[in-house]
Image 1 (cartoon, one colour):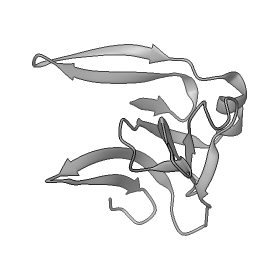
Image 2 (tube, rainbow, N blue to C red):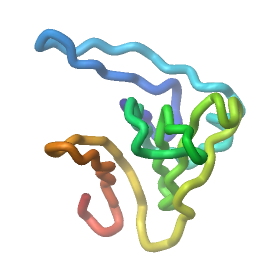
Image 3 (cartoon, helix red, strand yellow):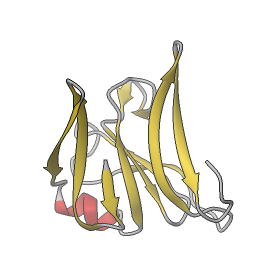
Length: 116
């Protein structure tokens, strides 16, 4: 997924049959307004990142103020839940998930530190 600092809708990219296809994602307006410093989001198709006990995240958001939030419409249709609170030590600009063997990871790009 890509979001250009919350300008316009998000683009979801899906790999299928050695080709990439995209579709646009329009999140609820209140949710987008809350994520005003959002730099990227990740679709989470697993149950590894919980929004609330027993409720997995549908989307994980990262923001320029080092905040990580998660959203599931069953928890709150109009707001993401902050899971990691921001600090001045990082500027999160990108995120992705990956599975290595049987473990899933959330990778974050930190512009301020210059690493992932």
